[in-house]
Amino acid sequence: MSAEQEVTARTSLFSPRYFWTTIGANALVFLGAFEALAVTTVMPTISRELNGQALYSVAFSGALAASVIGMVASGQWADRRGPSVPLIAATIVFIAGLLVSGLATDMGVFLVGRLLQGFGAGAINVALYVIVARLYPAVLHPRIFGMFAAAWVLPSMIGPPIAGLIADTFSWHWVFLGVGGLVVLAGGAVVPTLFQLRSLPNGAGDPDAVGRRGWVAIVLSVVVAAAVLAISLGGEAGGAYSWVIAAAALAIVVVAVRPLLPRGALLVRRGLPATVMLKGVAAATFFATEVYLPYLLTERYGLASWLAGLILTVGAVSWALGSALQSRIGERMEHAAVLRLGSVVLVVGVAVQFLTAWLELSPVVAAAGWFVAGGGMGLIYPRMGTLVLGHSTERDQGFNSAALSIADSVGGATAIAFAGLMFAVGLGLGVNPFASALALTAVIAVLAVPVAFRAR
Image 1: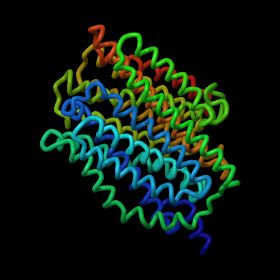
Image 2: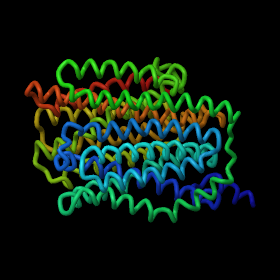
Image 3: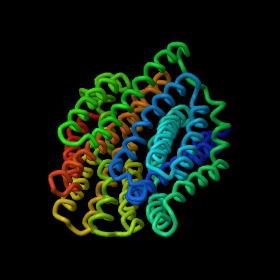
Image 4: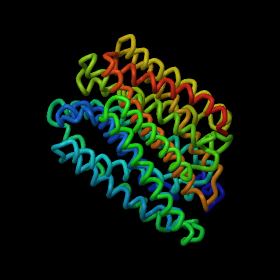
């Protein structure tokens, strides 16, 4: 290989060395994005048809909680044997979850499918992080993570309106079955990636030590997931009992999640711990807000599902634009500065959603605010991935990658669960339940700013 070819191989995501891995990895991100946006769009319809309004938030928090188990299992498996087999297994589970939800005729079965989807999606994300760390040079990390974010653009443009149109015209069942079919069709792009992964060194340390640690981590992840579900389901107890259950479950989450995160994460220590926690706080505010936006627009403004879903398109496109912007900035702006800017932008966008619900402003205002919030997330997320890998060695790439995704899912799931409680409180007191839920997410957004100032 000539010197010029060597430079091209190290600076292009589509050089022969990385081509099929880049295509396959982005195909998985694309499908995960399509599924997530589609579910958020049609969930108000599903909850009405299956008489599952009381379990609305559980459909989201349950999937995110299950993803924590998938993340931990995938991270430990990747540290011990490499990322290839975890990626294959996770994809199969993800497909199974789509089929179960798509064929469900009652809320219980539907939620089982959501749990499988969450487990598979979580495991896929961690496996992809490890693949990036072991295959791509550090100079390409910001670009590949930016490309992952950009992979949300097409599904964000077609996913919400198509999902809403299918649900309104035919049945929401076909949304899940259709995504499952897309996963199968995408196998042609993913298979070459899986073959290439087999040649990668696993970079693992002592397999027995990793195995012992892995079992402990998996048990803890199950405890975290169960506690998050308890918070969501506790809302059905009503009154003060729901808050007692939620408080006890939150304490369990904090204790159980601590060993799954870098030392000092819960204390928001500077560096890697604060970076991991920032992803958890950012995910908490963004995804808990996103869950209730289509619900707000369909219930309070009477918009059709496909039209309400367009607000998700607005946020996802803005996310991709923010990601592209931070990629073009590159190293000209320090990682810490980008994170601070993104967190402030996120606060503004989420605050607009609260004001829209509280003051009953136009849906156009909500869309504009969500465009701002998506841009903030686009600035934040790729840089956090780059920072975490920069703090990692081959021995702990799986653990740190899993920790970043765990913070994301635990933060999002816990916030969604508590937003559900706030929604129930609003209904019980006869006040605007959407404003009650979004007031919580706005407060969490404000907390992201000081955390961002400690990340580096």
